[in-house]
Amino acid sequence: MHEIKDTNRALVRIGFDGKVHKTFRGREAYVRFANEVRVLRHLEERGCSFVPRLLEVDEANLKIITTNCGSRVDQLNPERMKELFAELESFGVRHDDINIRNVTYRRSDGRFCLIDFEFATLIEEVAANPGPPPPDLRWSGQTHRGRVRPNNEDTFLALEFDGKEVRYLGKIGEASEAKADFVFAVSDGMGGAKSGEFASRITIDKITGQMPKNYRTAAPGLQSGFDRILHELFLGIHQDLTKLGESYEECRGMGTTLSLCWLTPGWMYFGHIGDSRIYHVPPGGALTQLTHDHGHVGWLRRNQRINEREARSHPMRNVLNQSLGAGHQFIEPQYGAIPCTPGDRFLLCSDGLIDGMWDRHLDEMVREPEVAPLAQHLVAAALERSGRDNITAMVVEAIPPPAPASQP
Image (cartoon, rainbow, N blue to C red):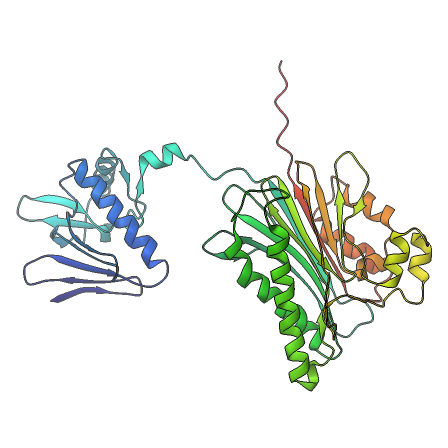
């Protein structure tokens, strides 16, 4: 065989019989392979005569064999090239790599042809799907080591996933829940030295590995089995941290809190352990703490034995009886679910944010419409008021639909 092209994306050879053998390789090889096969079959059905004809398809090896459309063209009048690609569109295909390298000349009939359709688009699909769905989620996240601590043991995570892959998201963004679920999480590591940071990182890695397997595996709502899925996740993290703590002296006592929100259309599922928090801020109601602080002071506050001011000054306010790892033999995380409607906001934060901010401050600031990004605004305010601990905040908002245009 005569080798025509050998790149990171494809290997192209011409056989002694003149047929073209193309093997896809590299990034998204299967997607490009499948797209070219689909487009070439479409063009054959439409009777397009100036493109390769598909002869064989080897899905296992990502290889196709096609007819030969002649030799590559070195020069072509720009107007003629424009006409050629426009002619292709009359057969329902838009070539998304308009370049002379994709033009050949077939001597047998004196015809210019087009090749390489791995990035082509079927025009009828574009018409049926005019664009990505509008975003219905907005988020921001920020963390800071504070004014006193030498290192930051807090970690936050923004994650988008479907049944095939997981994608890390930036600190600030917008997206749609139409084809993906989302996880937002805050963890506060503990254990001294660098082991708290290590515990937080293990927690994040476990989440990214496990959640895609559970993408919309059941009907949404309270009967979806979300609590079983989250319990398996929390228990797996706890066991991993416990094993490391028992195996390595430098990891002894290593642990972390975890507050996690899982957003799927119409619902927010949450799992929680420790003293990080998840707040719900509905558009027409008061800020509500969804999670329990897992310590004696948290129990006193939930049972109205002490108020918010007394809880802040209590000598046992930083003592936890529940966390992942940290030598706890048994754990009892908290799981819950609430409907998520446009306008809802959720605040996830470590205890460092709360140290400098009262609930009424959080309520006021999370509702501020003109302040963005909100997480950075909250962390800056907490740093100004206290900063004795690591500070982390994430704000997630279900974006309301745009208001209808007023009639004249």
